[in-house]
Length: 623
Image (cartoon, rainbow, N blue to C red; front, side, top):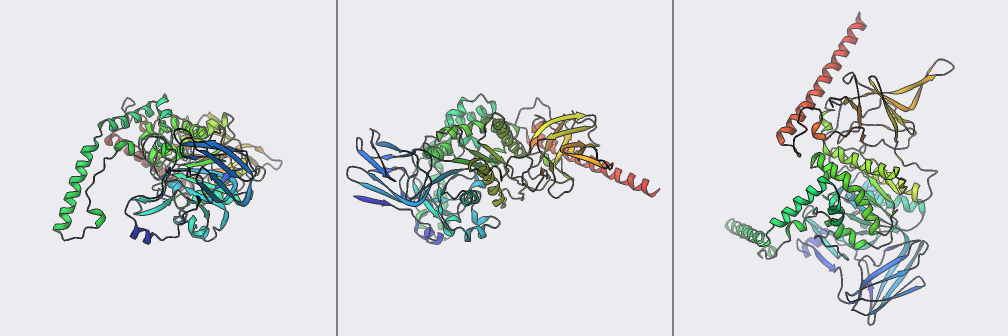
């Protein structure tokens, strides 16, 4: 028997799906079939990684001989007692010509058609990575021009439970958030219809790389909204970490699991269902046929939480493990910003471990990994609310992402990448300015992986040194920096030992005079001062969730200076003395109110002093 494994198109309208499908996942192809089958990673329309061994695996009856043929190569394996088999083909060069792969067993033959050889990139993170192209600014322009036969797209379905999955189903996945189904688990050719629901960042990234490199590109979207860094990290790694906040988080989940009673949960849901039925009947309202049945399933409780530590790794990364790929890009952080400074400390401990775990999953210790920093959310930071807007754990998450990059880069990891996104600002926590973010991370990939390092710059400006002289802090950079609009430089705050940060006045250091007596400035060195901070000891930059900050490398390079700081003061103990440093974290609502009140007072005092200075200047001028 010959079976041609086809891609399942997304041409059906959502209205039609809603009419025909229940409000739950509807599986078309199971994760592991009964007879001869391949992992659902391997399908018609896919891209296989060039220049690396091609590993293909699946299942058959125990002892069955399986032969895989592709592009003039043949490999054979026998299924083990667990039904699993795996073969490897030698590396091949990129190829735009569609080819066919056959998988032959004793009585069945599977055929995968329209396969290309190129580069495969994995997209990871939460909703800002997952955010669809159809919802972003200029998304429709990208959609109507998205005819790229050599770009292929696969979105991994969301799975649950702590056990590492071997494969994934191909299905229509129900979303309570969107009240609709999404097609997941199929490799598709990039067309305007298909690309609408792809990650906007991922699409632009793929498009840029494909157009510049002229090789087929496959993108595997393994992102999931509302997820945390610890769920993308193997549970075994988390348990091994000597990290107090990480172990505290694990204890929280372990306690929830121990306290979970599936039968009590079912009884409660049955009672709620019966009450709902009774109310509907009393009010004469119709009861849909699919709502008549009483719940009868025992749920797994906290173990099924998308953010149970390790769950997204187990359900969405583990099924990809062993696949040859080019690299990964990652955009996440929002849901780690709810636990104050302990959450940020945990992020700093876990994130580099997560990166290493992903590299191990794909058997590439130096796998290219690009970090997109946490995007903006909330009201903009201004001169009037500057200090108040510094009180947000999301800023510390963003700083931890840059610190992770910097640590790896300084350890000679030349496959790690980083781009800031804080300047692509909107008030909503899903800023629709996604296309420039995709362009930035594509620039890193093109410069480091595709030979465009002479034409493209990607590294953000970096600090070379910090010096305090009297009432000044001097920052030395590895490149010339400035405001791209050639206005005043915004975004730096300085503080003394009282930990009272205030926005700094920023000037370039003077390096001398030219032969005509004109002052010459050093654009690699900034001088920070504030009349509110006579003895500065520390600085912070872009320290707002939606920050007032504009420093970039000079030269229209679109390279923002990253969110960072020189101090290690915890969020809850700035300014000094408002909350005792013996206070157990997380702080209470009352203590949070005290801190915000103190920060508002700082802003008020600064505005008063600034107003006095303006009046004094006006009076002296009028004399």
